[in-house]
Image 1 (cartoon, rainbow over the protein chains, first blue to last red):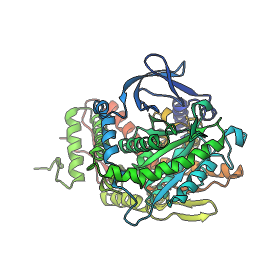
Image 2: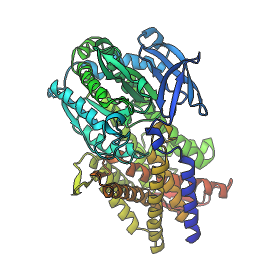
Image 3: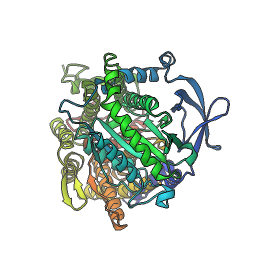
Image 4: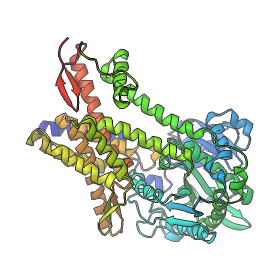
Length: 376
Length: 219
Protein backbone atom coordinates (compact mmCIF):
# COMPACT_ATOMS: atom_id res chain seq x y z
CA UNK A 1 0.00 0.00 0.00
CA UNK A 2 2.84 2.36 0.96
CA UNK A 3 4.69 1.49 -2.25
CA UNK A 4 1.56 2.07 -4.29
CA UNK A 5 1.00 5.44 -2.62
CA UNK A 6 4.57 6.41 -3.53
CA UNK A 7 3.89 5.39 -7.14
CA UNK A 8 0.71 7.46 -7.16
CA UNK A 9 2.48 10.49 -5.75
CA UNK A 10 5.23 10.11 -8.38
CA UNK A 11 2.63 9.90 -11.15
CA UNK A 12 0.85 12.99 -9.86
CA UNK A 13 4.13 14.91 -9.76
CA UNK A 14 5.03 13.71 -13.26
CA UNK A 15 1.67 14.93 -14.55
CA UNK A 16 2.29 18.23 -12.79
CA UNK A 17 5.71 18.63 -14.41
CA UNK A 18 4.27 17.83 -17.84
CA UNK A 19 1.52 20.42 -17.68
CA UNK A 20 3.13 23.21 -15.70
CA UNK A 21 4.03 26.32 -17.65
CA UNK A 22 4.42 30.01 -16.99
CA UNK A 23 2.32 30.99 -13.98
CA UNK A 24 -1.04 32.53 -14.66
CA UNK A 25 0.03 35.98 -13.47
CA UNK A 26 2.40 36.35 -16.42
CA UNK A 27 -0.58 36.20 -18.75
CA UNK A 28 -2.49 38.93 -17.01
CA UNK A 29 0.08 41.66 -16.62
CA UNK A 30 1.42 41.85 -20.15
CA UNK A 31 4.62 39.85 -19.56
CA UNK A 32 3.72 37.10 -22.02
CA UNK A 33 2.94 38.96 -25.25
CA UNK A 34 3.45 37.42 -28.69
CA UNK A 35 3.73 39.56 -31.81
CA UNK A 36 2.21 38.36 -35.07
CA UNK A 37 4.23 39.27 -38.18
CA UNK A 38 3.34 39.06 -41.85
CA UNK A 39 5.61 37.27 -44.35
CA UNK A 40 7.62 40.47 -44.82
CA UNK A 41 8.29 40.80 -41.09
CA UNK A 42 5.87 43.70 -40.48
CA UNK A 43 3.98 43.55 -37.18
CA UNK A 44 0.28 42.78 -37.61
CA UNK A 45 -0.91 42.56 -34.04
CA UNK A 46 -0.08 41.33 -30.57
CA UNK A 47 -1.66 38.74 -28.34
CA UNK A 48 -1.36 38.33 -24.56
CA UNK A 49 -0.60 34.63 -24.66
CA UNK A 50 1.02 32.17 -26.99
CA UNK A 51 0.15 32.10 -30.69
CA UNK A 52 -0.05 28.71 -32.40
CA UNK A 53 0.36 27.42 -35.92
CA UNK A 54 -3.08 27.26 -37.47
CA UNK A 55 -4.42 30.27 -35.56
CA UNK A 56 -6.20 32.71 -37.84
CA UNK A 57 -6.34 36.45 -37.78
CA UNK A 58 -8.72 38.88 -39.48
CA UNK A 59 -7.31 42.41 -39.28
CA UNK A 60 -9.30 45.64 -39.04
CA UNK A 61 -9.13 46.00 -42.84
CA UNK A 62 -10.42 42.41 -43.27
CA UNK A 63 -7.01 41.10 -44.35
CA UNK A 64 -7.09 37.46 -43.44
CA UNK A 65 -4.03 35.50 -42.25
CA UNK A 66 -3.14 32.07 -40.98
CA UNK A 67 -0.18 31.44 -38.65
CA UNK A 68 2.50 29.26 -40.25
CA UNK A 69 5.41 29.46 -37.79
CA UNK A 70 6.01 30.38 -34.16
CA UNK A 71 9.28 31.41 -32.50
CA UNK A 72 8.88 30.91 -28.76
CA UNK A 73 12.29 32.41 -28.01
CA UNK A 74 11.45 35.72 -29.66
CA UNK A 75 7.73 35.52 -28.77
CA UNK A 76 6.82 36.08 -32.42
CA UNK A 77 4.74 34.24 -34.99
CA UNK A 78 4.60 34.53 -38.77
CA UNK A 79 1.33 34.45 -40.71
CA UNK A 80 0.66 34.02 -44.41
CA UNK A 81 -1.82 36.29 -46.13
CA UNK A 82 -4.78 34.33 -47.45
CA UNK A 83 -6.99 37.04 -48.92
CA UNK A 84 -9.60 39.50 -47.87
CA UNK A 85 -12.28 38.42 -45.42
CA UNK A 86 -14.64 40.70 -47.30
CA UNK A 87 -13.93 38.91 -50.58
CA UNK A 88 -16.12 35.85 -51.04
CA UNK A 89 -13.85 34.58 -53.86
CA UNK A 90 -10.86 34.50 -51.54
CA UNK A 91 -12.82 32.67 -48.87
CA UNK A 92 -13.98 30.11 -51.37
CA UNK A 93 -10.39 28.82 -51.38
CA UNK A 94 -10.61 27.97 -47.69
CA UNK A 95 -12.69 25.23 -46.19
CA UNK A 96 -12.93 26.87 -42.83
CA UNK A 97 -13.62 30.41 -43.82
CA UNK A 98 -15.76 29.53 -46.79
CA UNK A 99 -17.87 27.75 -44.26
CA UNK A 100 -17.79 30.78 -42.00
CA UNK A 101 -18.63 33.04 -44.91
CA UNK A 102 -21.66 31.00 -45.92
CA UNK A 103 -22.78 30.95 -42.35
CA UNK A 104 -22.35 34.68 -41.99
CA UNK A 105 -24.89 35.00 -44.75
CA UNK A 106 -27.25 32.31 -43.62
CA UNK A 107 -26.78 32.03 -39.89
CA UNK A 108 -29.44 31.69 -37.28
CA UNK A 109 -28.98 35.39 -36.61
CA UNK A 110 -30.23 36.01 -40.09
CA UNK A 111 -33.70 35.00 -39.19
CA UNK A 112 -34.21 38.60 -38.20
CA UNK A 113 -35.49 39.79 -34.87
CA UNK A 114 -36.31 38.37 -31.51
CA UNK A 115 -37.60 34.89 -30.70
CA UNK A 116 -41.18 33.72 -30.93
CA UNK A 117 -41.99 34.96 -27.42
CA UNK A 118 -40.77 38.40 -28.53
CA UNK A 119 -38.17 38.55 -25.76
CA UNK A 120 -34.71 39.77 -26.61
CA UNK A 121 -32.18 38.26 -24.23
CA UNK A 122 -28.41 38.27 -23.93
CA UNK A 123 -26.40 36.40 -21.28
CA UNK A 124 -23.09 37.79 -20.03
CA UNK A 125 -20.39 36.79 -17.57
CA UNK A 126 -16.70 37.51 -16.95
CA UNK A 127 -14.50 34.42 -16.61
CA UNK A 128 -11.46 36.42 -15.52
CA UNK A 129 -13.21 38.15 -12.67
CA UNK A 130 -10.06 39.91 -11.47
CA UNK A 131 -9.28 41.76 -14.71
CA UNK A 132 -8.94 45.48 -14.03
CA UNK A 133 -7.61 48.66 -15.60
CA UNK A 134 -4.41 50.16 -14.20
CA UNK A 135 -5.26 53.88 -14.66
CA UNK A 136 -8.51 53.86 -12.67
CA UNK A 137 -8.33 50.66 -10.64
CA UNK A 138 -4.68 51.09 -9.63
CA UNK A 139 -3.85 47.50 -10.48
CA UNK A 140 -4.41 45.09 -13.34
CA UNK A 141 -5.86 42.39 -11.08
CA UNK A 142 -8.38 42.87 -8.26
CA UNK A 143 -10.18 40.08 -6.42
CA UNK A 144 -12.94 42.45 -5.26
CA UNK A 145 -14.77 45.03 -7.38
CA UNK A 146 -12.66 44.34 -10.46
CA UNK A 147 -12.85 46.92 -13.23
CA UNK A 148 -14.09 44.44 -15.82
CA UNK A 149 -17.51 44.44 -14.13
CA UNK A 150 -17.84 48.20 -14.67
CA UNK A 151 -17.35 47.63 -18.39
CA UNK A 152 -19.80 44.71 -18.35
CA UNK A 153 -22.33 46.88 -16.51
CA UNK A 154 -21.93 49.63 -19.14
CA UNK A 155 -22.68 47.13 -21.90
CA UNK A 156 -25.64 45.74 -19.97
CA UNK A 157 -27.14 49.18 -19.37
CA UNK A 158 -26.65 50.22 -22.99
CA UNK A 159 -28.33 47.02 -24.21
CA UNK A 160 -31.21 47.45 -21.75
CA UNK A 161 -31.76 50.98 -23.00
CA UNK A 162 -32.37 49.40 -26.39
CA UNK A 163 -35.04 47.10 -24.99
CA UNK A 164 -32.86 44.01 -24.69
CA UNK A 165 -32.98 42.00 -21.47
CA UNK A 166 -29.53 41.19 -20.16
CA UNK A 167 -28.60 38.68 -17.50
CA UNK A 168 -25.07 39.67 -16.45
CA UNK A 169 -23.75 37.30 -13.84
CA UNK A 170 -21.50 39.12 -11.40
CA UNK A 171 -20.26 35.84 -10.01
CA UNK A 172 -16.50 35.55 -9.61
CA UNK A 173 -14.43 32.58 -10.78
CA UNK A 174 -11.25 33.14 -8.83
CA UNK A 175 -8.38 32.59 -8.94
CA UNK A 176 -7.30 33.53 -12.47
CA UNK A 177 -5.92 30.06 -13.18
CA UNK A 178 -6.42 27.10 -15.51
CA UNK A 179 -9.70 26.23 -13.81
CA UNK A 180 -11.30 29.64 -14.30
CA UNK A 181 -13.07 28.46 -17.47
CA UNK A 182 -14.25 25.25 -15.77
CA UNK A 183 -15.75 27.37 -12.99
CA UNK A 184 -17.34 29.90 -15.35
CA UNK A 185 -18.75 27.10 -17.52
CA UNK A 186 -21.15 26.38 -14.66
CA UNK A 187 -22.47 29.93 -14.80
CA UNK A 188 -22.55 29.85 -18.61
CA UNK A 189 -24.66 26.67 -18.50
CA UNK A 190 -26.97 28.32 -15.97
CA UNK A 191 -27.38 31.33 -18.25
CA UNK A 192 -28.11 29.03 -21.19
CA UNK A 193 -31.10 27.58 -19.36
CA UNK A 194 -32.78 30.94 -19.95
CA UNK A 195 -32.30 30.60 -23.70
CA UNK A 196 -30.29 33.74 -24.55
CA UNK A 197 -29.78 34.85 -28.15
CA UNK A 198 -26.08 35.28 -27.43
CA UNK A 199 -23.69 34.43 -24.63
CA UNK A 200 -20.85 36.92 -24.12
CA UNK A 201 -17.73 36.52 -21.98
CA UNK A 202 -16.49 40.02 -21.13
CA UNK A 203 -12.70 40.42 -20.85
CA UNK A 204 -9.92 42.92 -21.29
CA UNK A 205 -6.64 42.28 -23.08
CA UNK A 206 -3.10 42.57 -21.67
CA UNK A 207 -1.13 44.09 -24.55
CA UNK A 208 0.20 47.68 -24.67
CA UNK A 209 -2.52 50.37 -24.58
CA UNK A 210 -1.67 51.90 -27.98
CA UNK A 211 -2.94 48.73 -29.65
CA UNK A 212 -6.43 49.59 -28.44
CA UNK A 213 -6.51 53.42 -28.63
CA UNK A 214 -8.97 54.78 -31.19
CA UNK A 215 -11.62 57.42 -31.82
CA UNK A 216 -15.23 56.85 -32.79
CA UNK A 217 -17.34 59.87 -33.77
CA UNK A 218 -14.45 62.05 -32.59
CA UNK A 219 -14.58 60.55 -29.11
CA UNK A 220 -11.61 58.63 -27.64
CA UNK A 221 -12.71 55.05 -26.96
CA UNK A 222 -11.16 51.65 -26.66
CA UNK A 223 -11.18 49.18 -29.54
CA UNK A 224 -12.80 45.79 -29.05
CA UNK A 225 -11.22 42.48 -30.09
CA UNK A 226 -13.48 39.53 -30.93
CA UNK A 227 -11.91 36.26 -29.87
CA UNK A 228 -13.03 32.88 -31.21
CA UNK A 229 -11.75 29.55 -29.85
CA UNK A 230 -11.18 27.28 -32.82
CA UNK A 231 -10.92 23.98 -30.91
CA UNK A 232 -14.60 23.22 -30.68
CA UNK A 233 -17.46 21.95 -32.79
CA UNK A 234 -19.18 25.35 -32.78
CA UNK A 235 -16.17 27.20 -34.18
CA UNK A 236 -17.76 27.83 -37.61
CA UNK A 237 -20.90 29.28 -36.03
CA UNK A 238 -18.89 31.36 -33.56
CA UNK A 239 -16.67 32.65 -36.38
CA UNK A 240 -19.71 33.61 -38.43
CA UNK A 241 -21.16 35.45 -35.45
CA UNK A 242 -17.90 37.36 -34.96
CA UNK A 243 -17.70 38.22 -38.66
CA UNK A 244 -21.24 39.56 -38.66
CA UNK A 245 -20.52 41.76 -35.66
CA UNK A 246 -17.34 43.09 -37.28
CA UNK A 247 -19.08 43.78 -40.60
CA UNK A 248 -21.87 45.70 -38.88
CA UNK A 249 -19.47 47.63 -36.63
CA UNK A 250 -17.26 48.48 -39.63
CA UNK A 251 -20.34 49.88 -41.38
CA UNK A 252 -21.60 51.88 -38.39
CA UNK A 253 -18.47 52.72 -36.41
CA UNK A 254 -15.29 52.08 -38.41
CA UNK A 255 -12.34 51.35 -36.16
CA UNK A 256 -14.39 50.15 -33.18
CA UNK A 257 -13.57 46.50 -33.80
CA UNK A 258 -9.83 45.99 -33.54
CA UNK A 259 -9.78 42.58 -35.21
CA UNK A 260 -10.89 38.96 -34.89
CA UNK A 261 -8.43 36.46 -33.44
CA UNK A 262 -9.26 32.80 -34.01
CA UNK A 263 -7.03 30.94 -31.59
CA UNK A 264 -6.41 27.49 -30.17
CA UNK A 265 -8.61 26.48 -27.23
CA UNK A 266 -12.36 26.39 -26.68
CA UNK A 267 -13.00 29.18 -24.11
CA UNK A 268 -16.36 27.58 -23.22
CA UNK A 269 -17.54 28.30 -26.75
CA UNK A 270 -18.20 24.60 -27.26
CA UNK A 271 -21.33 24.89 -25.13
CA UNK A 272 -23.21 27.32 -27.38
CA UNK A 273 -22.88 28.29 -31.04
CA UNK A 274 -23.58 31.97 -30.34
CA UNK A 275 -20.98 32.46 -27.67
CA UNK A 276 -18.16 34.94 -28.05
CA UNK A 277 -15.32 36.41 -26.03
CA UNK A 278 -14.99 40.19 -26.21
CA UNK A 279 -11.81 42.02 -25.17
CA UNK A 280 -12.67 45.57 -24.14
CA UNK A 281 -9.36 47.42 -24.18
CA UNK A 282 -6.29 46.41 -22.30
CA UNK A 283 -4.97 46.61 -18.73
CA UNK A 284 -3.14 49.86 -19.50
CA UNK A 285 -6.00 51.76 -21.13
CA UNK A 286 -8.41 54.08 -19.28
CA UNK A 287 -11.43 52.07 -18.18
CA UNK A 288 -13.69 54.95 -19.18
CA UNK A 289 -12.70 54.39 -22.82
CA UNK A 290 -13.68 50.73 -22.59
CA UNK A 291 -17.00 51.75 -20.99
CA UNK A 292 -17.64 54.19 -23.83
CA UNK A 293 -16.97 51.54 -26.46
CA UNK A 294 -19.47 49.28 -24.67
CA UNK A 295 -22.19 51.77 -25.62
CA UNK A 296 -21.30 51.49 -29.32
CA UNK A 297 -21.04 47.72 -29.09
CA UNK A 298 -24.59 47.56 -27.70
CA UNK A 299 -25.90 49.26 -30.82
CA UNK A 300 -23.94 46.90 -33.07
CA UNK A 301 -25.14 43.82 -31.18
CA UNK A 302 -28.73 45.04 -31.30
CA UNK A 303 -28.49 45.50 -35.06
CA UNK A 304 -26.82 42.12 -35.64
CA UNK A 305 -29.14 40.12 -33.40
CA UNK A 306 -32.46 41.89 -33.83
CA UNK A 307 -32.24 44.80 -36.21
CA UNK A 308 -31.68 45.79 -39.82
CA UNK A 309 -28.56 43.68 -40.25
CA UNK A 310 -30.35 40.56 -39.10
CA UNK A 311 -33.30 41.15 -41.42
CA UNK A 312 -31.02 41.95 -44.38
CA UNK A 313 -29.08 38.73 -43.83
CA UNK A 314 -32.32 36.82 -43.42
CA UNK A 315 -33.43 37.79 -46.91
CA UNK A 316 -30.36 36.16 -48.46
CA UNK A 317 -31.39 32.53 -48.31
CA UNK A 318 -31.30 29.25 -46.50
CA UNK A 319 -28.92 27.95 -43.88
CA UNK A 320 -25.47 26.74 -44.78
CA UNK A 321 -24.31 23.22 -43.97
CA UNK A 322 -21.81 24.36 -41.32
CA UNK A 323 -23.92 23.04 -38.47
CA UNK A 324 -23.85 19.59 -40.02
CA UNK A 325 -20.09 20.04 -40.45
CA UNK A 326 -19.82 20.67 -36.70
CA UNK A 327 -21.92 17.62 -35.93
CA UNK A 328 -19.84 15.59 -38.38
CA UNK A 329 -16.62 16.62 -36.65
CA UNK A 330 -17.97 15.74 -33.22
CA UNK A 331 -19.10 12.29 -34.37
CA UNK A 332 -15.89 11.66 -36.35
CA UNK A 333 -13.76 12.48 -33.30
CA UNK A 334 -15.82 10.15 -31.11
CA UNK A 335 -15.50 7.32 -33.68
CA UNK A 336 -11.76 7.94 -34.06
CA UNK A 337 -11.26 7.74 -30.29
CA UNK A 338 -13.28 4.50 -30.16
CA UNK A 339 -11.24 3.00 -33.02
CA UNK A 340 -7.93 4.01 -31.39
CA UNK A 341 -9.03 2.45 -28.11
CA UNK A 342 -10.12 -0.77 -29.83
CA UNK A 343 -6.80 -0.98 -31.69
CA UNK A 344 -4.72 -0.42 -28.57
CA UNK A 345 -6.66 -2.93 -26.50
CA UNK A 346 -6.69 -5.70 -29.13
CA UNK A 347 -3.40 -5.04 -30.88
CA UNK A 348 -4.61 -6.07 -34.34
CA UNK A 349 -6.81 -4.46 -36.97
CA UNK A 350 -8.94 -7.61 -37.14
CA UNK A 351 -9.40 -7.63 -33.38
CA UNK A 352 -10.21 -3.94 -33.32
CA UNK A 353 -12.78 -4.39 -36.09
CA UNK A 354 -14.40 -7.25 -34.21
CA UNK A 355 -14.47 -5.24 -30.97
CA UNK A 356 -16.04 -2.24 -32.69
CA UNK A 357 -18.62 -4.54 -34.29
CA UNK A 358 -19.52 -5.96 -30.89
CA UNK A 359 -19.93 -2.49 -29.41
CA UNK A 360 -22.01 -1.30 -32.37
CA UNK A 361 -24.24 -4.33 -31.95
CA UNK A 362 -24.66 -3.73 -28.21
CA UNK A 363 -25.44 -0.03 -28.62
CA UNK A 364 -27.86 -0.51 -31.52
CA UNK A 365 -29.62 -3.51 -30.04
CA UNK A 366 -28.23 -5.81 -32.75
CA UNK A 367 -29.19 -3.56 -35.65
CA UNK A 368 -25.58 -2.85 -36.63
CA UNK A 369 -22.31 -4.67 -36.12
CA UNK A 370 -21.85 -8.27 -35.12
CA UNK A 371 -23.37 -9.84 -32.05
CA UNK A 372 -21.57 -12.13 -29.62
CA UNK A 373 -20.45 -15.50 -30.89
CA UNK A 374 -22.87 -18.21 -29.96
CA UNK A 375 -21.90 -21.75 -29.20
CA UNK A 376 -23.22 -24.20 -31.77
CA UNK B 1 -32.89 28.57 -31.39
CA UNK B 2 -32.90 26.81 -34.75
CA UNK B 3 -33.07 23.07 -35.39
CA UNK B 4 -29.40 23.21 -36.41
CA UNK B 5 -28.40 24.65 -33.05
CA UNK B 6 -30.48 22.09 -31.20
CA UNK B 7 -28.93 19.27 -33.26
CA UNK B 8 -25.43 20.57 -32.55
CA UNK B 9 -26.09 20.64 -28.82
CA UNK B 10 -27.89 17.28 -28.92
CA UNK B 11 -24.92 15.66 -30.66
CA UNK B 12 -22.70 16.56 -27.73
CA UNK B 13 -25.27 15.15 -25.30
CA UNK B 14 -25.65 11.93 -27.32
CA UNK B 15 -21.90 11.39 -27.49
CA UNK B 16 -21.71 11.92 -23.72
CA UNK B 17 -24.60 9.47 -23.37
CA UNK B 18 -22.90 6.82 -25.53
CA UNK B 19 -19.44 7.20 -24.02
CA UNK B 20 -20.82 7.54 -20.50
CA UNK B 21 -22.91 4.40 -20.82
CA UNK B 22 -19.90 2.41 -22.10
CA UNK B 23 -17.72 3.74 -19.29
CA UNK B 24 -20.19 3.06 -16.48
CA UNK B 25 -20.65 -0.39 -17.95
CA UNK B 26 -17.02 -1.10 -16.95
CA UNK B 27 -17.83 -0.46 -13.29
CA UNK B 28 -19.61 -3.76 -12.67
CA UNK B 29 -22.93 -2.09 -13.30
CA UNK B 30 -25.46 -3.82 -15.47
CA UNK B 31 -26.36 -2.25 -18.81
CA UNK B 32 -29.61 -0.95 -17.31
CA UNK B 33 -27.91 0.53 -14.25
CA UNK B 34 -25.31 2.23 -16.45
CA UNK B 35 -28.02 3.65 -18.73
CA UNK B 36 -30.04 4.83 -15.75
CA UNK B 37 -27.12 6.63 -14.12
CA UNK B 38 -25.95 8.35 -17.29
CA UNK B 39 -29.53 9.38 -18.15
CA UNK B 40 -29.95 10.79 -14.63
CA UNK B 41 -26.65 12.71 -14.96
CA UNK B 42 -27.74 14.32 -18.23
CA UNK B 43 -31.36 14.99 -17.21
CA UNK B 44 -30.32 16.15 -13.73
CA UNK B 45 -28.10 18.77 -15.32
CA UNK B 46 -31.23 20.62 -16.41
CA UNK B 47 -32.85 20.57 -12.96
CA UNK B 48 -32.56 23.70 -10.81
CA UNK B 49 -29.48 23.86 -8.59
CA UNK B 50 -30.08 23.00 -4.94
CA UNK B 51 -28.86 25.63 -2.43
CA UNK B 52 -27.16 24.36 0.72
CA UNK B 53 -25.67 27.38 2.46
CA UNK B 54 -24.90 30.97 1.60
CA UNK B 55 -22.73 30.79 -1.51
CA UNK B 56 -22.84 27.00 -1.89
CA UNK B 57 -25.21 24.96 -4.01
CA UNK B 58 -25.01 21.84 -6.12
CA UNK B 59 -26.37 20.54 -9.38
CA UNK B 60 -28.28 17.25 -9.45
CA UNK B 61 -26.71 15.88 -12.64
CA UNK B 62 -23.23 17.31 -12.20
CA UNK B 63 -22.72 16.53 -8.51
CA UNK B 64 -25.52 14.66 -6.70
CA UNK B 65 -25.91 11.72 -9.10
CA UNK B 66 -22.13 11.23 -9.52
CA UNK B 67 -21.82 11.34 -5.71
CA UNK B 68 -24.60 8.76 -5.29
CA UNK B 69 -22.87 6.59 -7.89
CA UNK B 70 -19.59 6.93 -5.98
CA UNK B 71 -21.28 5.80 -2.75
CA UNK B 72 -23.00 2.95 -4.62
CA UNK B 73 -19.67 1.76 -6.05
CA UNK B 74 -17.81 2.30 -2.78
CA UNK B 75 -20.30 0.23 -0.76
CA UNK B 76 -20.11 -2.56 -3.33
CA UNK B 77 -16.30 -2.66 -3.31
CA UNK B 78 -14.83 -6.13 -2.72
CA UNK B 79 -13.03 -5.44 0.53
CA UNK B 80 -12.35 -2.88 3.23
CA UNK B 81 -8.89 -2.57 1.72
CA UNK B 82 -10.32 -1.53 -1.66
CA UNK B 83 -12.66 0.94 0.04
CA UNK B 84 -9.68 2.49 1.86
CA UNK B 85 -7.73 2.66 -1.40
CA UNK B 86 -10.61 4.53 -3.06
CA UNK B 87 -10.55 7.19 -0.36
CA UNK B 88 -6.76 7.52 -0.44
CA UNK B 89 -6.85 7.83 -4.25
CA UNK B 90 -9.54 10.52 -3.95
CA UNK B 91 -7.49 12.52 -1.46
CA UNK B 92 -4.31 12.28 -3.56
CA UNK B 93 -6.31 13.23 -6.67
CA UNK B 94 -7.75 16.27 -4.88
CA UNK B 95 -4.24 17.46 -4.02
CA UNK B 96 -3.04 16.78 -7.58
CA UNK B 97 -6.05 18.65 -9.04
CA UNK B 98 -5.41 21.61 -6.75
CA UNK B 99 -1.74 21.77 -7.74
CA UNK B 100 -2.42 21.22 -11.44
CA UNK B 101 -5.08 23.93 -11.47
CA UNK B 102 -2.70 26.36 -9.84
CA UNK B 103 0.35 25.70 -11.99
CA UNK B 104 -1.10 24.92 -15.40
CA UNK B 105 -1.24 27.97 -17.71
CA UNK B 106 -4.40 30.03 -17.28
CA UNK B 107 -4.83 30.64 -21.01
CA UNK B 108 -6.73 27.69 -22.53
CA UNK B 109 -4.70 28.02 -25.74
CA UNK B 110 -1.56 27.04 -23.82
CA UNK B 111 -3.08 23.84 -22.50
CA UNK B 112 -2.62 20.66 -24.49
CA UNK B 113 -6.09 19.62 -23.37
CA UNK B 114 -9.05 20.73 -21.27
CA UNK B 115 -8.20 20.81 -17.51
CA UNK B 116 -11.01 18.31 -16.89
CA UNK B 117 -9.20 15.84 -19.12
CA UNK B 118 -5.92 16.41 -17.26
CA UNK B 119 -7.68 15.73 -13.95
CA UNK B 120 -9.31 12.61 -15.37
CA UNK B 121 -5.93 11.33 -16.56
CA UNK B 122 -4.32 12.11 -13.19
CA UNK B 123 -7.16 10.38 -11.30
CA UNK B 124 -7.04 7.34 -13.60
CA UNK B 125 -3.28 6.95 -13.16
CA UNK B 126 -3.41 7.50 -9.40
CA UNK B 127 -6.26 5.02 -8.91
CA UNK B 128 -4.61 2.44 -11.16
CA UNK B 129 -1.28 2.77 -9.36
CA UNK B 130 -3.01 2.35 -6.01
CA UNK B 131 -5.21 -0.59 -6.77
CA UNK B 132 -5.75 -1.26 -10.49
CA UNK B 133 -9.38 -0.47 -9.91
CA UNK B 134 -11.77 1.03 -12.43
CA UNK B 135 -14.25 1.77 -9.66
CA UNK B 136 -11.46 3.43 -7.70
CA UNK B 137 -10.66 5.53 -10.76
CA UNK B 138 -14.24 6.79 -11.07
CA UNK B 139 -14.45 7.57 -7.36
CA UNK B 140 -11.02 9.27 -7.37
CA UNK B 141 -11.84 11.36 -10.45
CA UNK B 142 -15.25 12.42 -9.18
CA UNK B 143 -14.52 12.94 -5.48
CA UNK B 144 -11.04 14.32 -6.14
CA UNK B 145 -12.36 17.15 -8.32
CA UNK B 146 -15.25 17.80 -5.90
CA UNK B 147 -12.87 18.08 -2.94
CA UNK B 148 -10.47 20.34 -4.86
CA UNK B 149 -13.40 22.55 -5.91
CA UNK B 150 -14.62 22.90 -2.35
CA UNK B 151 -11.10 23.55 -1.03
CA UNK B 152 -10.62 26.35 -3.57
CA UNK B 153 -14.00 27.84 -2.67
CA UNK B 154 -13.14 27.83 1.04
CA UNK B 155 -9.76 29.47 0.36
CA UNK B 156 -11.34 32.21 -1.75
CA UNK B 157 -14.05 32.81 0.88
CA UNK B 158 -11.35 32.94 3.55
CA UNK B 159 -9.69 35.69 1.52
CA UNK B 160 -12.86 37.73 1.93
CA UNK B 161 -14.35 37.29 -1.55
CA UNK B 162 -18.04 36.41 -1.67
CA UNK B 163 -17.53 33.73 -4.34
CA UNK B 164 -20.32 31.27 -5.13
CA UNK B 165 -19.79 27.56 -5.71
CA UNK B 166 -22.30 25.51 -7.64
CA UNK B 167 -20.78 22.05 -7.45
CA UNK B 168 -21.25 20.27 -10.77
CA UNK B 169 -23.08 23.33 -12.11
CA UNK B 170 -22.35 22.47 -15.75
CA UNK B 171 -24.38 19.25 -15.37
CA UNK B 172 -23.28 16.34 -17.54
CA UNK B 173 -20.53 18.47 -19.06
CA UNK B 174 -19.10 19.54 -15.72
CA UNK B 175 -15.44 18.91 -14.99
CA UNK B 176 -16.55 16.53 -12.19
CA UNK B 177 -18.36 14.19 -14.61
CA UNK B 178 -15.71 14.48 -17.34
CA UNK B 179 -12.89 13.70 -14.88
CA UNK B 180 -14.78 10.72 -13.40
CA UNK B 181 -15.55 9.14 -16.77
CA UNK B 182 -12.12 9.81 -18.22
CA UNK B 183 -10.41 8.37 -15.15
CA UNK B 184 -12.16 5.04 -15.83
CA UNK B 185 -11.11 5.12 -19.48
CA UNK B 186 -7.49 5.86 -18.53
CA UNK B 187 -7.29 3.10 -15.94
CA UNK B 188 -8.96 0.80 -18.48
CA UNK B 189 -6.46 1.80 -21.16
CA UNK B 190 -3.46 1.40 -18.84
CA UNK B 191 -4.91 -1.91 -17.65
CA UNK B 192 -5.48 -3.18 -21.20
CA UNK B 193 -2.00 -2.09 -22.27
CA UNK B 194 -0.17 -3.68 -19.34
CA UNK B 195 -2.28 -6.82 -19.63
CA UNK B 196 -1.51 -7.03 -23.33
CA UNK B 197 2.22 -6.52 -22.81
CA UNK B 198 2.21 -9.25 -20.16
CA UNK B 199 0.08 -11.59 -22.30
CA UNK B 200 2.10 -11.19 -25.50
CA UNK B 201 0.46 -13.04 -28.38
CA UNK B 202 -1.49 -15.43 -26.16
CA UNK B 203 -5.27 -15.15 -26.19
CA UNK B 204 -6.90 -13.33 -23.25
CA UNK B 205 -8.02 -15.58 -20.43
CA UNK B 206 -10.74 -13.20 -19.21
CA UNK B 207 -13.76 -11.65 -20.85
CA UNK B 208 -15.94 -8.73 -19.80
CA UNK B 209 -19.55 -9.89 -19.62
CA UNK B 210 -22.48 -8.04 -18.05
CA UNK B 211 -20.36 -5.70 -16.03
CA UNK B 212 -17.90 -8.23 -14.72
CA UNK B 213 -14.81 -10.13 -15.80
CA UNK B 214 -15.29 -13.85 -16.27
CA UNK B 215 -12.74 -16.50 -17.11
CA UNK B 216 -12.86 -17.25 -20.81
CA UNK B 217 -13.13 -20.86 -21.85
CA UNK B 218 -10.03 -21.94 -23.77
CA UNK B 219 -10.96 -23.01 -27.28
